[in-house]
Image 1 (cartoon, helix red, strand yellow):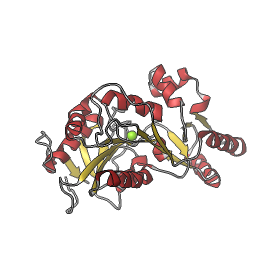
Image 2 (cartoon, rainbow, N blue to C red; image 1 turned 120 degrees about the vertical axis):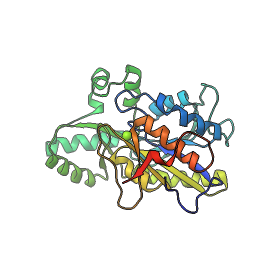
Image 3 (cartoon, protein in one colour; image 1 turned 180 degrees about the vertical axis):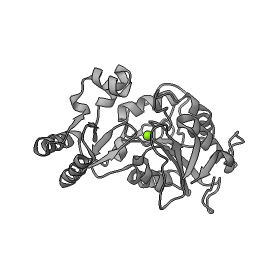
Image 4 (cartoon, helix red, strand yellow; image 1 turned 60 degrees about the vertical axis):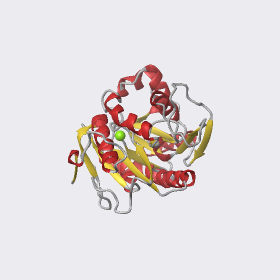
Length: 296
Ligand SMILES: [Mg+2]
């Protein structure tokens, strides 16, 4: 794996990750195969930051399961939630008890304004789509494979609206221009299209770099991992960019940044590549090695 010449193990490293198809298996949402690297990050007290199209409620449940207490970027950069931490320099909690209070940084447009705009566009432009707000919990479970509780958490949104797009490429083009007139955009995730304000996962990276820089008082280095087109700006804003192999999306590539590609899909590739990075930085003896990644 290529790391910047000026980077070293003395820098303050932060690992930022997409969730669906990256830390979580695309089909089953399981994260067990990622645990070897998650546990190593915990041992080293390296912050793991979720940067996902998922909602705060969804990310909080994964944070509680993994013991993550670092900030989390929700809904494609729409907001950043900073959990209240018992120790501001500890980014992992040993107990399953999670602090439900914290600070909320808003970077997006409220969901109710987004819903008004997209319904208006559908009425005027006759563009076929179904938004999450129009699906019952049972219907949402059917299209996502989520449990009832997880589907409810996916419905509780603040800054974005996912859609099942039933139209053609030409409809999508018209939809994009109409959204732009409302100050909105649409991006494609692993499974759905998501409408939001003009924020993205990359802009949130700049905020995170400042946040951790102040906290650490040292140079901040960021490694980012993602599997879908909406992760590209996040990967481009990182020092080390890792494209996790997807069973459904074509390989991600950037014209401005070297991107490392995992050989395994989802959480297995995630774990192997994070361990390889820690090994290369001589932070961890781990099993990983540069041979597990290639640059395309
Ligand atoms: Mg993804």
